Length: 262
Image (cartoon, rainbow, N blue to C red; front, side):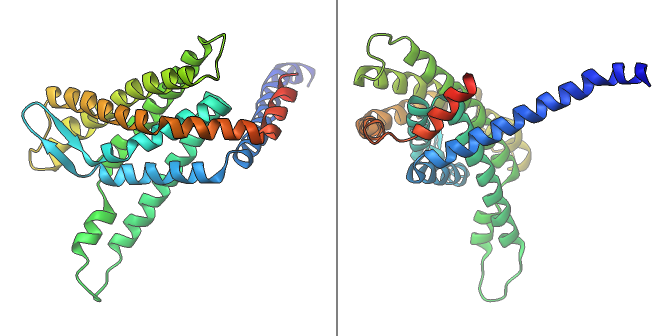
């Protein structure tokens, strides 16, 4: 019995440590979502859902460029991430990204169920096709968004750390937002188009596909277009951050983090 206890004790210690860490992480997450203004979280979640729906439609396709409908709204997702990363940090932003992705998957599931329920009230073929979506588009969109979001949030935070003298200045915020958005959007567009239009589309869409050049130019053009939108709306994003600081938004969350570190 003594020998068995000596062998199993480290295992139980590790389990207890993991449980305590998960409890602290859960409590921290609860504090975080209580403190982030609901309007911004709502905008972010809605933009992610819309981006997934719009990605089903190709807006432009030539021999050297192709763009899907997601380009119209994805800039809003990245701007929301930039605001959260700047104010609450990259870890907090990643948690909001995960929440939005889970809600998007749940929404797609509800849409799919609605699309397969038969109805004789009218001809819902077009609506069912839209609501049902395409599984590999959802897969590509989710994978691309999660990877690009982590890249965007980390870059935003890393660039912000380089502004030692005045990290809260307009120049600092603009540099963080512009650089991280362009690079993050490039990876988002490229990963999505490579998975969907190079990987699955030729098999499931009767040979329809994008070339490597089209995927790269789509990623670059989309990133440039979304960067322009970021530049146009970043002054409003900066004002939101300044307003949060003035109103001391998130003080409970920051206090919890400080106590956790101690």
